[in-house]
Length: 283
Image (cartoon, rainbow, N blue to C red; front, side, top):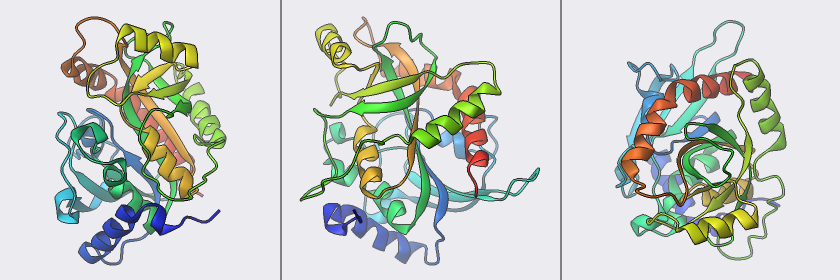
């Protein structure tokens, strides 16, 4: 089924604004949406956790008529650049959304995904969603990097409207997940595959809610990501997801500061994995 712009008019409006602001943009090989404490360091050219992008354009979301994320640890721009050709690898065209807009900030999911929708409409070969998550599965220790295998978004928002009967049977691409695991095998630390359960937030989940999500099959829980994956599925864009377990869901004294701190501790491992994944998938 071809994507219909009327399923997500906010993305179409944002695409027009982006083309006006940056005419001549090329489609990208990869788009990355940055989660809490993840997106900005990936494009920090002086930072030790950066991807090493040669940045060509950076546009604040505000210049596209969008609200800036209000959550600490989230950037507020789209960054276009490339990984230069090196060591037998071709160049990789990349767009990084340095932070995400969340529905719990008071915005509809259709607006929260407008920058993603704009870039998907421009052309994206593959999408990587990153996020901080709470651990539901007791086998997942804090600091673990996980690969999203599937999701439970039944209780969360959708960016789509109308008769958008989109196939979500491979919402996190099996091919991309296999390639990700191939990169992991060259390293020292396993990356478990998990089911991501959506919670609306902004409040953390109660112990009873965590127990219910565990019964439904959730391994981790978060307040984002699912609606972005739905939009990517509508665009038929192969998608994978990487999360950092930043706390044990439902435990006492949870805080966003803890989320930022654990995301920071995982940056080196995460950025190395992301860099390897981007290089591995250039045709």
